[in-house]
Length: 134
Image (cartoon, rainbow, N blue to C red; front, side):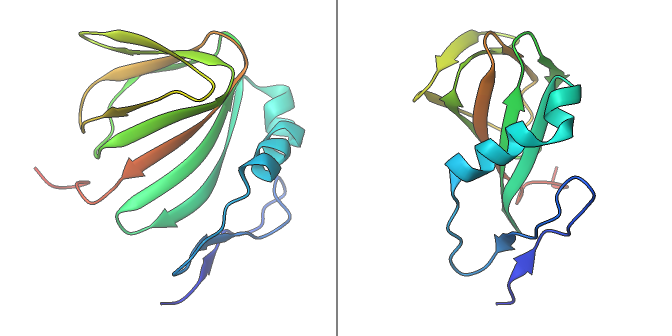
């Protein structure tokens, strides 16, 4: 298997490993990086893909208090694990508040929204094997 790295941009000057047989992910360092970037300082959110391969993605997402990810769906199963802060995760049938150390799992194609009650950093894991399948 060939190792894959993100491409450096004006926002992120350093490459980091996205895919390999074994990828070690320093969530504390990525959280610090996320909060130091201008996107975090100038908008209500920021995110960093920390792992990306066929079948799965892991994304670190930061939301300022009051920021909302409007109703949307995912083409695969997801998990949301709160690392800092507190958020409200809402589907058409239920709402759940999650704080540091809590997580949820959601099946594919279920409409949902996310609201940051406090400044929040969470880890989103998305299975992508179902994408494009009916």
